[in-house]
Amino acid sequence: MLVLAFDTATAAITVALHEWIPGEGARRRGHAEAVDRRRHTELLTPSIKAVLAEAGAAPDTLSAIAVGVGPGPYTGLRVGLVTARAMGASLGVPVHGVCTLDAIAWASGRDEPFAVATDARRKEVYWARYASSRARGTEPAVGPAADVLDGAPEGLPVIGEGAALYPEVLGESGHEPLLPTASAVAELAVARLAGEKGPDLLPPEPLYLRRPDAQEPGPRKKVTPR
Image 1 (cartoon, helix red, strand yellow):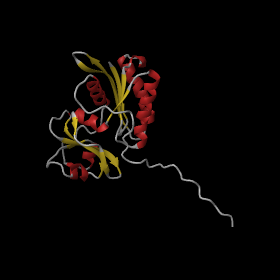
Image 2: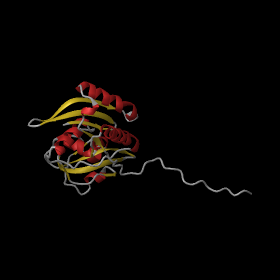
Image 3: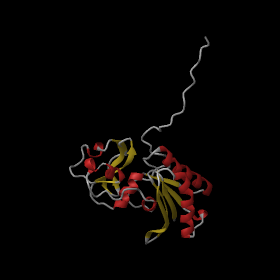
Image 4: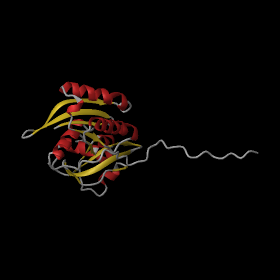
């Protein structure tokens, strides 16, 4: 099983190719990472080509595609999702969604309860709480940083870029990993496809949690001639 994974829901443009080997588990064949909030469109496709070239793999050898579905800003998130769906349709392979917060949680490897928070801008964060790196306890949400710990056990650790942005609210240390990696997206997807425990795979549909800033214009007002 050869799984191409990528995520564009945050400032990270991250791509990885993992192979599932029975009896051995997932093995990374190639990866590319960049951090740029404004160049998701320009960087994603070249990164995919570079990762496939690094692995010596052709697109038609892929078994599946895994893509981060957010939550995240509208523009960056749709770049990854549109690319994943287009590749899946052209190659005839399934496309699986992975919650971006789940990918950060998975990469942490934590066994005790914690929360993940990413930057939602507007002085808010996207967040969810976890019983462990493999078990999400709440639905993804968006709101002020204080919401992450509202009603949570005292001293609950919070990781992710959102935690690093609001340390006075979410704690001063232990925020790694800050951003998602495609390797974590791939590992999670491969584990679930192989029947292991972990957060559910999702349809390749965006978790925006907010309406996009850009709105379609309404009908033009009628002008009454004088």
